[in-house]
Structures are given as C-alpha cells and as structure tokens.
Image 1 (cartoon, rainbow, N blue to C red):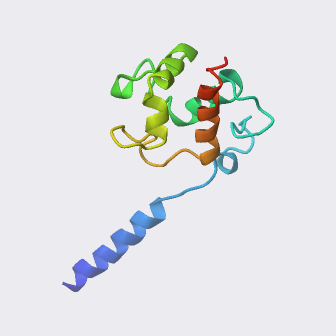
Image 2 (image 1 turned 180 degrees about the horizontal axis):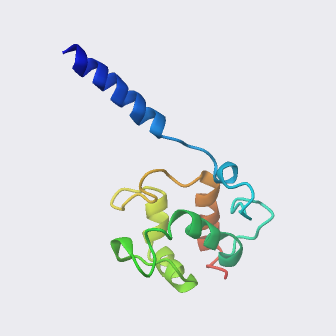
Length: 124
C-alpha cells in the first residue's frame, strides 16, 4: 500500500512538472515572431489573422490533415469558416461547437482581433 502511495506521488509530480506554459515570444525570442495582438498591426487577414491561424490552428487544420474536415490554409477557407460561424463560435467556446484550440483558449486579444476582422467584413 505504501509503494502505491509513493508511486502515485511520484507520478503526480512528474505529470505536473511536464506541464509547461510560457508565452510564444519567450519560447522563440529570435525567430522573427510577430505578435498578432500588436495594436500597431491592422485587423486584416495578412497582417494579423493569418498569424493567429498559423500559430494556433494550422497544425490540425491544413491540407494534409484537415481536423474536423476544416482546412484553414487560405484566406478564402478562413473567411468561409468565419462567415458560417464555425470559427467565432469555436474560439469563444460556445455551446454546440468544439472548443478551439482544444487544450487552451486563445488569448483574449486574439479572439478580439478575429471578431474585429469579421465585423469589418473580412479585410484581406
């Protein structure tokens, strides 16, 4: 019984220490990262929305692997899934939609940037 408790404690410690959260900028300080929440950027697809999609969505929603049959590699595809409500409802984690990204919500500024882009009629 004592061995099980010790194993449980060790396992819990290892599991907890394996979770690491940090900002993308801190993890990649020299690789040319552009912060999509930078207020000097316009709320257009090419200046900010594409960055948000690239850093948060494209690994699961691309031409090779379109998770949930959603491919977000082009402006037209992102616009389509935004206009039909799939992206905004998913990132807002609304009932009836799969929360995206599934493990951790987007930063509030990224969600606001996408909503602003939609409100402004999807400027490219």
